[in-house]
Length: 282
Image (tube, rainbow, N blue to C red; front, side, top):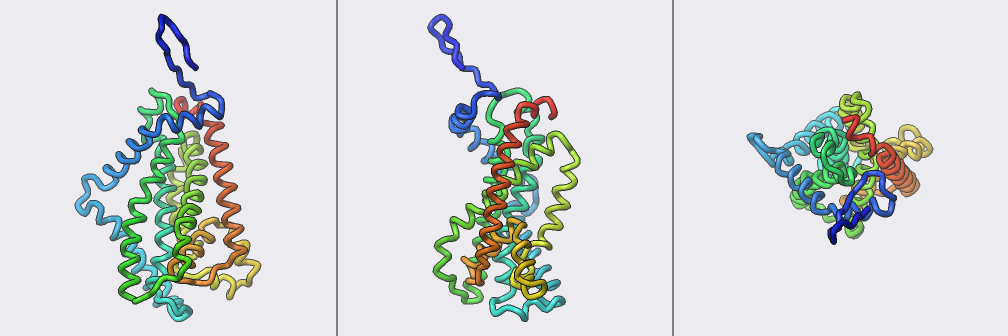
């Protein structure tokens, strides 16, 4: 609200303002969004020996482990005509983005305690900037994927043109769940231990080392459909569909999209509901 005194206008911003004004404030504070995002990018690999090379090593080493465990020992490399390393890596990209975004967003508010406790701004900017910076590792890894496709002489299908929409879906999934976990982590610090466990477990219950069609072959189409309640199942399947042309299970994608939109709604709603108490709880 604005107060006028002696021909001066004083602008007072409050966290409890009307919803319409709140979303306008996000646009007003867009420079802070850029600053926080750029700061997170600069400090991510600061004081590390390899620096940004970790953005390459992590997915490559994970791919090698999956190729050995699932491909060689599990025999899953024989079940697909697509080069198995390419199949795995095309799933690691969306999963890596999701896991990094969720991990960084869950601790973003606690990591900015001094800023949150002293200055008002739309708090949603903090976890949003954390999710955005996860794109750095994603694009580095995407470059590796292109090199792998050249190595295997694998020509992408025409639906690769739809890839931006699939990336948007993965962003929505990460942002919605990240907002909800971020707000919970401020009040219940146990979530700092739960999130790494969920991320570690999630890579195995998502179709990263295997195709979701394997679920249908083993348990049936009905189980495959409900398996897509994991919103990353649809995102990973759609990403593979765009990159390597693996057949897409449309009912599962529709379910995953619905779950992702549900988490976005719940995440934003719960975040806004608890936002006023962040400064006190932190």
